[in-house]
Image 1 (cartoon, rainbow, N blue to C red):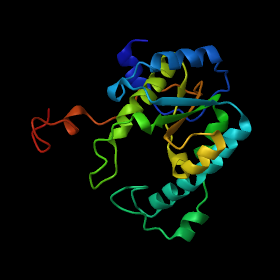
Image 2: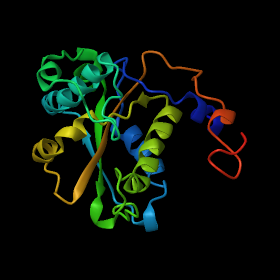
Image 3: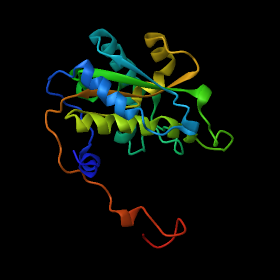
Image 4: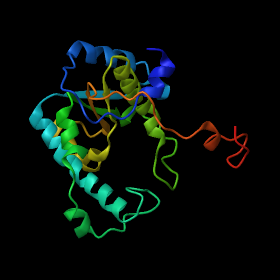
Length: 220
């Protein structure tokens, strides 16, 4: 596919047809995604390809606490998991909030493979680690790679979705998958053949998010 077509049609895929995703195709996807940039070209990405159904069920269960809070906060009119506005929903309400099967477990089990993507923190340069806010800079060394996986999957006729809800239970994910302490879990990527391939995505126009010279400058 032409690169701009790939970029404009790589949407979140949560429903899969059940068509196989062979290892040779998965390897080709990762073989191309590995050329993504990382800080100092230190390439701290590690990928765990999970096909085992029972392991995926466990990953789904570990995703549910994060999903419960997400759903409960939306129902309360809050921005879910927002670092500037802590959760104001009563913990008992969060705990009692049901999680639709299709939101986590259904997607993980419907996919042909679930990639758990990790970052070696021993090679990450976090220039914002002393700032009084949530750190985001370390993500520069892993999320271009993650996006590269999704772009490559789209080019191969497959799709997936970047999900981070499981990260709220990272210690348990480490135990489940044998992940060392110096690695952060960046996300999960369920991959498979989409039931329906989108051809048009809705995004804000450039004039709404790009300005000249200053944050409050005129639109680009």
